[in-house]
Structure formats: C-alpha cells, structure tokens
Length: 139
Image (cartoon, rainbow, N blue to C red; front, side, top):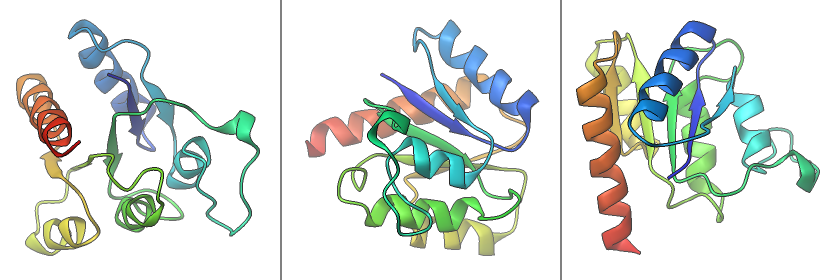
C-alpha cells in the first residue's frame, strides 16, 4: 500500500508518514499543496498534462488536508475523482475544521472518509484499512 500525504504543514506530513511507516506502509509520497499533489498524480491543475516523469505510480490512498493555500483540498479531491486514472482512489480528508459544511462539501467532492486533527494514530490507520478494504471489494 502506498499513500500520498497532502498537507501544507511539514509537521503533519511527517507525523502521518511516521504513523504509516510504523504500521508497515512504507515510503509515502508527500506534497505540500494541492497543486503539487495533482502534479504527482499526473493531473493538471492548469489543463496542461505534466511530464510523465513527474508522476508517482501506485498510490492506493490519499490523505488530504482541507485548508491549504491556493487550491483547497475539497477542490483537489473533486479533480482527483474526475480524473479517470484516479477516480477510484480513496481520498481521506484530514482537517481541524469541525463544521458540518466542510464535512458535507468533502463528501460531495468524492471523499471516502474524514479524519479530524489532531490525528489519532489508531483512528487514522483504521480508517485507511477500511477505505482500502472497500476499494478492494469494489475492484
């Protein structure tokens, strides 16, 4: 299993990566913003397809912050879900926002689940396993 962690906070990216690595999910890819994440996935945020060398292969799950500078995580999630190659990839939104509007918007954009900050390791790993199990059943 390979994850893509998208968060503008280096500290959050490193914490999530440490949780995943300790749980046996090696080498997570990381992006500091939505535009970089779309580029790694081979999805253009500008309409121009990125060079193939810029893409990351084998992403099984995406953990994405909602509030980021530039494009927010909800818009990035919607673009990921519209792209044929990534439409079935589970996207778990990770955010400190606790309002129902953000939750509703995330699910409307195609998010599979929602994890609140501060991140609880056990909850995060359980939600990742659940998303991957559901994806495997659908495949």
